[in-house]
Image 1 (tube, one colour):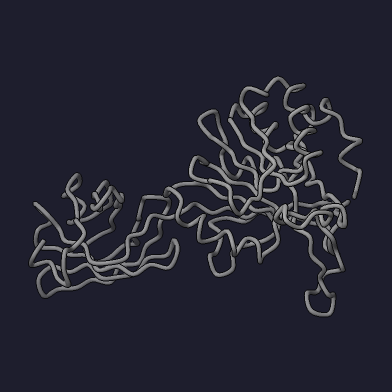
Image 2 (cartoon, helix red, strand yellow; image 1 turned 45 degrees about the vertical axis):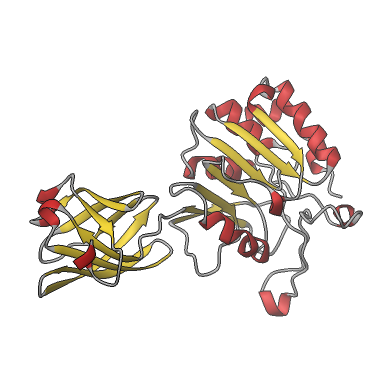
Length: 306
């Protein structure tokens, strides 16, 4: 196992926000992936003893860790869950530098013990927790921010559980994406000493879990003559705004529970998913004048029974 982490002290962690996420073990064939053969620290179920020791522990560089916390706008009200937390430095840094609380999930008992020691030395033991646990069985529901350094197949296994989280939950991944769920934002950072792959740079991907708004929505009150029929692919939304026989195409984007539509001939809309309602909270144009009223989920195939 790579012992680089052992040489980094608590003092250096707090003086230079170092990221230490645990990556998943994998071998990449250069002819297929375009990357050099690279190992990353394993995050596999505890039922496979010894596997942890077969691959090195990869430390995320300082600038990558800081960017992961910055891009997620981590603050004192946040609870960060780090999946594959290594020696726990991202959780400790989130608590020490940004005032957050945090949970680190790691399968190596020695690293969990080290994480607790580092957090205690940093004075944030009361705001951090580290567990020996399989990340795939971890309860993510209390997280406002989830960080991870896992390879694509593991990200994809986690994706259904992540998409089921509370809308607005922020997700950050070092290097690896979520397949066809495109990031809301990606930054690229120079990492001259990067140990995995040929490229000496890292990508930090950021997503916000979107509310689900697909379906038929019926206007109420001043919006009583309007309906919205929406389809959705992750944060991308398309559909139709209709009033009696007139229709206008809708395109928009989810940001957590908020749907902001592009301009139409009758203006734009900002809608908030609130239970079984889409509340009109802003926008421009004729329809937006009904701010404060709502569309409600249809009970049938049309709005006649709404």
